[in-house]
Image 1 (cartoon, rainbow, N blue to C red):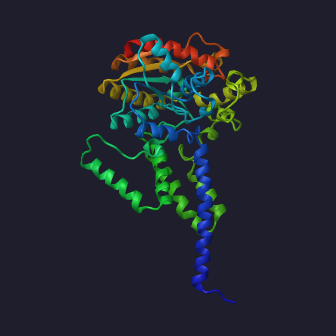
Image 2 (image 1 turned 90 degrees about the vertical axis):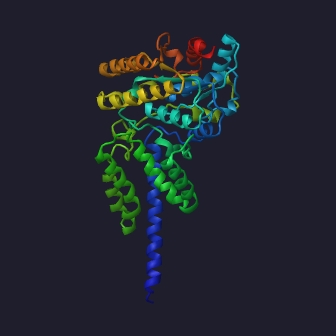
Image 3 (image 1 turned 135 degrees about the horizontal axis):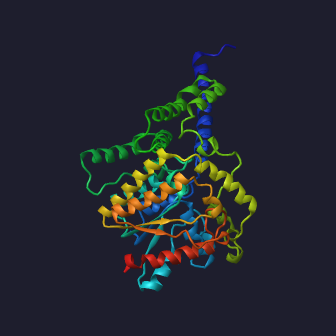
Length: 412
């Protein structure tokens, strides 16, 4: 029996849509695994920025800051273990230390994110300024990887405002900004959810390229993203996938962690892993134990972060760090730049050029913008770490006690 052209067209469209949905699902999964995943932390960051009250002290940085300032809260009983997870952004132990030293109660919040670079810290500070919520004191914990990371885009791990799904907000919007606010509200009413998400993902990929991306990188990202809509509709799934992979060789559209690093890696952010352990005894939490296999695996991983020395990224991150310091100074905020401790084994992998540039850049920014530069790297050994970069609860206690002493002048 002959099939009508309309029926054939309907079957063809349904088949094409199935290919599109399957392809987009795979690309979404690829996007989530391309960097250290902040998926479970983003809602807490968004809530704190948009709806949270203004803090007295804000902490920024990477997963090194996340673990160092959250684990002691659970280990020492300042927070119940059921709260242990990526959504935890409070810093109760540090707040308690400050109260003991100064007699003042403070509200401190930790808006660090995994694999963060200066671009991520700058993003959060800018969004807080728009909402008139930038605290009087900002502490930015920073390690060599954040300055010259081969695996994290210069535009940051988060991917800009689009990744946080923040509604645009301005204290005193100009005409252009009012137009942006109107367009944002209209897009929510007019565009289908799938289409909004599609363009949101494109914004994230472009944001990760940084403020001054190469034209070729921009072309590659746009081409790879729009290919998802059109190539698969030719009912040639295998060919489309192969063609997409060619386009997806740009720095952002591919998975950085698998492009240059060894295939076998261990995720070290651990906060979300330990969330499964809620209700167990805090004295036996695994963040106080370390396996040699884990250490060796992580050292291999960090060779991919450090080698070779990326001078171009160092210069771009230097500029972003200066912008962060400038905004803090203009808003009357005390900025503390904290050199975070890592183990000797890990630091031995850092190229001399990167290590020297890291020290010189932080010193230059601190001097130019009158920031407090704290070197808190000394006095730690392997027993203070859960691997080669992340402090355990014991190490976090040490770090916070030293930081609390340094904050006296800012708090009083």
